[in-house]
Length: 92
Image (tube, rainbow, N blue to C red; front, side, top):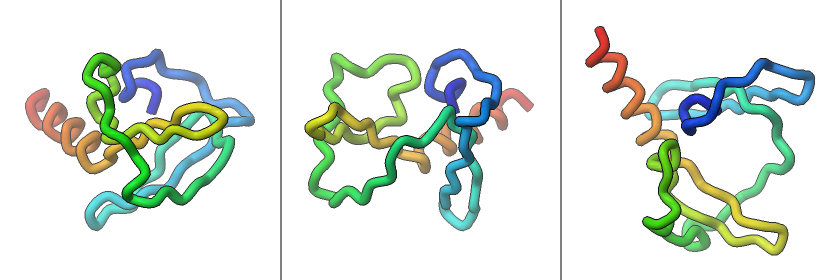
């Protein structure tokens, strides 16, 4: 997941976790450095990602959620993996 977000890849540690997600009709597992909380967010809560904050790897973000303890970035997994599939097809 770090590589997809424009960061250096990491080696799995005891804190690493696999987040299970569904994209279209596929179930996938995403290796992440850790999970600190799981939240249900109403569809109306995320705000648009400011263009000034879009950096490489943030192109797949589709919302920012302001919380008292900080901001949460909501990723659009459909878009993230659609882009990855296209990149693989071009490389083949």
